[in-house]
Length: 428
Image (tube, rainbow, N blue to C red; front, side, top):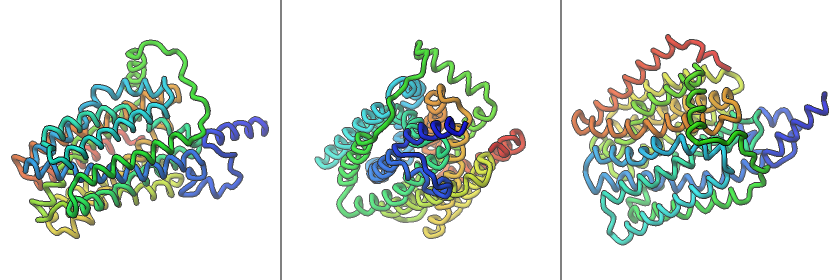
């Protein structure tokens, strides 16, 4: 029996590119997943690339506001970026189950690099217009729609299942470390030399993740059996989610958070100028404070995820986020606003990472790509609708009232889930 267990451990370890660990302490470490070479390549390659992504995102939003002076247009940008999720995300989940995920990721990342080059060229030549930003956001959304399900389900090709939660948490810490640094750097670069250099750095940064993917030593990809029509595969994924009460609740939670909780991010460029009396650098600081808070949330989850049920952590984040969004909507002093948006980011990341880890621990391997495409659609698909609603509401009610309303609705919904789905918070 021990030989069978040992062989299974070796097979799991080969997935991450190294022999199985013999040290129990390493297994419980905050950075356990980084002991696997493939994951290390992914982690540091992605971190560098995401620095560029956040620089571009921050600079593009502020450029859009400069070109139009319209908070509603910020909502249009967010909507254009997220619209392709509704059209392509479920099909992309089928692709993630049928094709090598590394290949899907390399194609998607290459397309994103080309789009960054185009945006940099338009800006350097002084020809960039507001409609260019809409079109490029739409094209970037298409690439993201195919990238996201493959990226979410790729984690188990780099680390064994026992370190899945740790790897997911470290993924988010990496994402948010970049989110903590990239926007601030982007805001300063924008103020010093203009947005085109932010877009240029983003284009260059994609080389890091492409190189990391190329250098990985992965087990041969094994597509799931029964490869019928794509529509039938999509239906199977949807039926599974509809039949599983906990997974269905988690995904509806994501929809509501994306619709009401995250929409305030769209308004940050206008908030920096109109509410706090700042500029591009202030916008960068707000984005960075949110990212820093999310990074801390991810690291806390990586450290303590084994000590508490995932459902309890998810519930904690679902209440923490709206409370701080409401407080942020009432603040008018920049240092206080930075502190409040920091804790908003922490709450969101505890919620989002716990949702991800809990979903992946419940779903069978043969449906992983499709279920994670639905999971990602709930997040990326409803966020642009939230951005559109927030932009329109801000144009009529003002930014503070819009953020206060969104946070209040989210808090009411979190209380409803607490009362109606009590078993969620006890799920391990």
